[in-house]
Image (cartoon, rainbow, N blue to C red; front, side, top):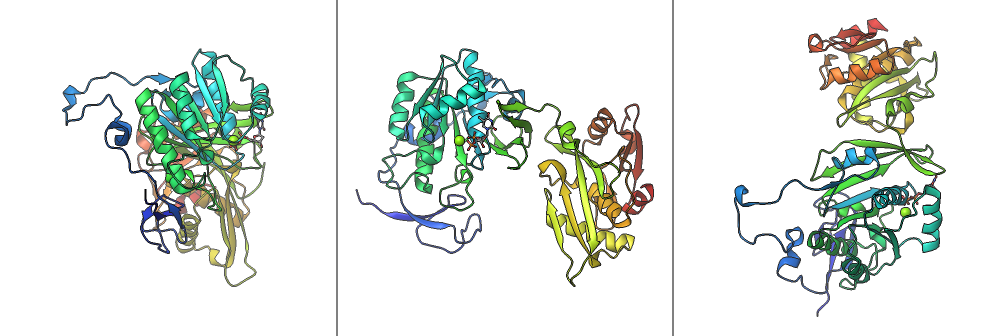
Length: 456
Ligand code: TYD
Ligand code: MG
């Protein structure tokens, strides 16, 4: 068979016959690399139809003709993870867990596997990264010993496929997709074409046998191996495991889910004995708040269906250069710059002469517009040096005219604030009358940032 090469985008997997400087799909520059394409032509028939599998009808059907009941969900033993998955693992689905190396992906899946194995489910953990001894040490640390949880160190995908067909596990974990190798593609493990091919084979295996397959994918910034984004469109569910390397908290975030809502998050803490769930994230996000410091206010944003209280910190200092410095950690820098401009124009504060730094405490990353009011108040507090009372929580979207606009699920946010012991909530006036205030919290509606300024 004649071998040919093509150019693949390392970022999104786009395939092009000729080299281009900028990927036409994801618009990233210098991401195209030359790699051999699949040597054998895809087989026709069920196997090449991907997820269609063999048991599906090969003619168009109406909804009435489609049989099958509810999808079967298996709990992972981690309610935090189940919520992100939409209520447990769907049988026969393929789930990608991406994240930076060392963030805890292997630990998370090993613990989830151990939990499910304790319920008597047969699980095969395929590792291409670690030796059996290394896995044993980790499993002993997190208490993962179980008869139905088996380990297999292999990188040859054909062997893995054979093993799955023989052992018939209910669930397979591939750690990681970047170490897997298929002889059908003449490229090194981790190359875009190799990662796509191996994922394709696993996808067909999942749909043919009804096995649930978890794949781990490292996110790589250097671009030497293909990242999980190449695979996002192929799998059913994409979760990212993220966190600050220097903090022990980890967030599992759903970014795609064919069987549930996205944007849900699960919070974990990495401890000596493995990952432990954090069922009440507001509590940890607020722990260690400075007392009596200016430039700090608590805001409430929604992560999926869940309200979360986060501390916004701002530091405003007179600029020593002509060009003021702006820096945002955990939130959008452009959004922050717009808010500073709105404050300058509408409140008459000369922020263009000041450097400004905004930070979401606890290593959170949020972009929700409801953060706006918190950012404005934190900046204001740092500028004036007036301390905002520690019992205040503030949220609302800020428009270019300095107006404070309504945000969704205001009542849930207020309830969360009340639950965490906050006594005052500054929020958009619009829609305020519809909110039933829980006991112990005073609601102060504002129409503009000028009105909010007068409250602190
Ligand atoms: P790991 O799951 O190997 O990361 P990944 O698979 O995403 O590359 O996690 C590695 C880190 O987690 C490592 O720095 C050590 C830490 N860790 C703990 O703190 N406690 C534990 O019980 C375990 C198993 C790991
Ligand atoms: Mg690992």
